[in-house]
Length: 589
Ligand code: ZN
Ligand code: ZN
Image (tube, helix red, strand yellow):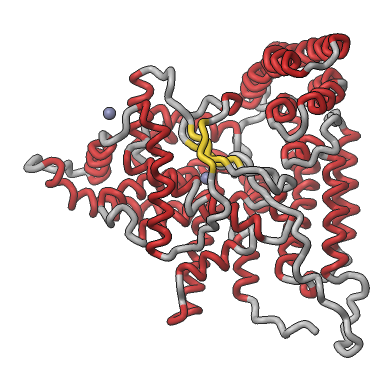
């Protein structure tokens, strides 16, 4: 997973040239790359006014003190914005723009159409009580040190003003909400209360604000906490005899997939490909397991059922893992090893001026062990990129053992490939160099996750882990997770897959622990489509890689592919493909 997508920089477009000369006969008036870039700035400014929470999270702090009340008027404003901006966009002819601007144009158009679709068709504001939750933005303002504490506390104070109105409006929007999302809303809003109670008090103590001002802030925080508690009480007491099903349904699912994933094909096609991929992986895993069997089980007869045999081998290999207190240092030691391997195989250029800072996971992110990347927001050029590593401190021996078997010596290395090098972290460094604010903000999750998954495969194919069959087998197991995420999500939301069927698939066919399978069921019952991003992105990048290899023939180099692909930033794969395969443009005069 990746925590905050990206990065980056107000790079001025290097190639805004496109100057007209009298001779070419094309009059694109004022609609050239220069005007388009200026229009993008205007677009973003308007976007932030309507979406102050989003602005805060990407590091744009002009609207930190605003909280929009989620009522019909706010939705009207969103629709008006979409209409006006779509009209502005239609004045630009994409074919006349540079490749990068052309992709921006498509990504912005998708964003606006998605807004329209969300408000007019999906209408989750009626059935998803968890979409009403102010706590994330307030936690961000309190915990991220982007400005002096006093300044942040004053924004915090002003922003609190609308909290009671916010939750009153929320109650009025709901109609037969989804049961699972109602429970989630209760859990998450209750969980966020500590921001207004404990965390705020701690910050105030450190702030040196005058006492009178501190009291004002504390009083308003009390009203805010009361409003959150009232919403929670409302949800708990709500009569809801005919709740909407948590299953999205086929039509809404296909549409959401189209806007969120921006894939080349449909959700149905991705699902079909995942089913095929699972079959292939099972066949390959059986081959490797059969080969490894005598090494680990000597003369014992192998189970006839091949899934059972694979499961036994995986189980045995999982016993090789670090001790709980070595978890963090094991992850730290992995980074230089990965860097050295990538250099020796010449897979991709790693920028030595942008080191990854490994740190202990900050307390306010806590909860999950493992590792994640925190990248500076798009407006924060100078920020560090952190590799947050969780600790297993305070875990029961049993829980730690189960977790460490999951993140055993093999998977731990693959995790670092995925999260850091050459996965998410490397992709972010390249995206930072791509001259587009738009792609940083509207970054495509399927490309980002797909790259991380694809980069694991490149490392395996380059012989990472001494080409050991054990490493390949464990990668296939890890890879099955992405594949089965897609099968699960599609089957649950467009069909009727039950919890029992889901857990059976995840434990028997994807070799997951019961706890992981239970957690996945919970996730699929409160989210849709996002779980398909890993495999969809992987599949399209893998196809693009093969097509590019064919086209380049003798001239093909993995490194060239990687660097060219990454140079477009976090854009949907289909647009990168279009740009990579476009006939070279006649030189501009
Ligand atoms: Zn990821
Ligand atoms: Zn053990």
